Amino acid sequence: MIAAWRPRRHSEGAARFARQVVLAACPATASHARSLLWCCAALGGFGELVGLEPDAAVLLSPSFVERFVTDAMTGRSPTRLRSVRTNLRFVGRRVVPKAWPPDPLALPRNRSKAPYASAEISAYLRLADAQPTELRRYRLSALVCLGAGAGLSGPDMRSVRGSDVECRSGGLVVSARGRVVPVLTAFQSRLTDAARYCGERFLIGGAQESRKNLTSNLLHNLSGGTDLPRIELGRLRATWLCTQAEAFSLAALFAAGGFSHSQYLGDIVAMLCPPVEDELVRLLGGRYAGD
Image (cartoon, rainbow, N blue to C red; front, side, top):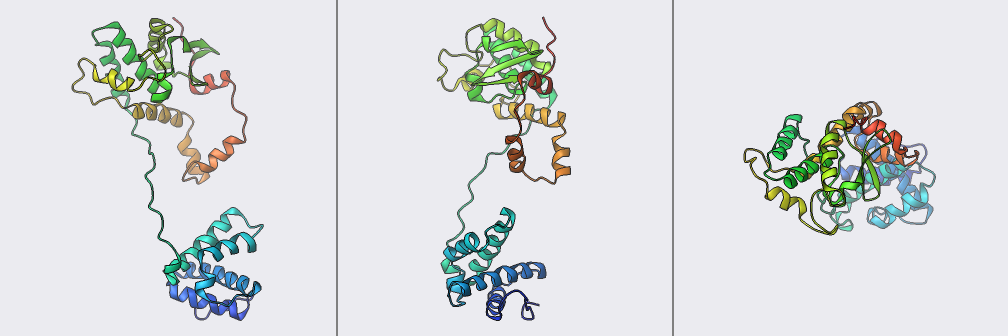
């Protein structure tokens, strides 16, 4: 198929260059070969236009591929540009490998931790109730409620005082590092009690907002609960995120929209007006039941 390929829109020299380099690249499928032939013929035609010989070492060099994509394909969609560059890099690495540095080592990405089941959250709250002092009871209860009930991370929790937990806009909200987060109904009563007890003090302990290892010290000094695994803040936050994702049918949106990641959705969200506090409470929290 490659040897018989004759394009109508490119010169014979550009087509010959494309056939040679694509044959050398050994694509696995016919459809991939056709994509590579089109890209390489367009590259060869651009080389002729700027006065270069159809030499693979020159036309398939990283710098010339970038020049082709940026200069010869202006006005094309970003998706098309990425596809063409990916195809040309594929051929270049196979035909002139010495011109192409090895791919950078992929760095690890942060992945969401597994959420806690409802029974596990209940067990940790019972553990909080079993602590020998009021201070420990309220601090551990607040930690669970801030994580699983409001989705706060460790740095967020460090900044929260009892006075940052307020009943307003029809629900219970927490102010943490410049943003307001509604608290899920199931955690409101416990968090309210902890906030009243702490007042102006930090909910999970310490005297300075810059303090470190607070949660580690709190969890290390727990009494009982030897049959429970150590609480993980990442799993508490994942529990809140999964609760909200399920409530908003996020899985259905991804399935219907054909999304595999959230970058495109992030671009869409950036174009929308952020909700006001009343709307946040209605959507993400729940009506406050009162005393």
